[in-house]
Image (tube, rainbow, N blue to C red; front, side):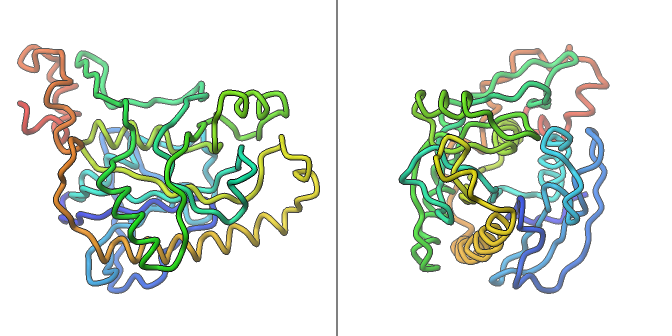
Length: 287
């Protein structure tokens, strides 16, 4: 299935639908890696065709560790997506990154334990470059979109991706702070890795809901406070996304679109037919 939707949007906690999306249709997609989190809502936003996916399902029924990241990203690839704008709720590890701040992290640190983070294996080996895990071209578009939307965005920082679903202990939280980490969440690293393998530009908006448990005021935060912040973050994220979509498409003057070019070590002619078939969408131009 290809609908040539070039822009994909992933909504995280609190962002289960995209305001302003018109002429919508539901696309139920099967992938070689199973089912995505939900159907993709395809519609028109700021005059552009986009596909929206609720990361945890629109009813928020999927834990971070239960997410089928491969299916989610492969589904976008099947639709023809070249840019993925991700939004996710995070905790802050820095005093200066306050609740309701919007941050564009440019690095990740992996603390997950039980996740599949690659399309490859089973007879085909690939090692993509991941030193700069976020597409700088797309991040620049989102940064400019924040200005357009009147929503301040802080650029840079490291996102610790933890396994969850439990939050950190104070010992863990203070250790991450001692390492110089900035934000903590449970989802974005696998998306970034798989988007790179799928040759899709990816950038995430980290929406700060609260301080992580290192902060002395953390225990005074209520569920009502978190929900209120999720709602306000969702509104800001949608403003930025609409402004970013208005600016897209741009020239893909990055290496994301050719990230597999020098990454595949296996002679594909000698690779197992079943694996080659499973990865045909990703490998088509290299076969």
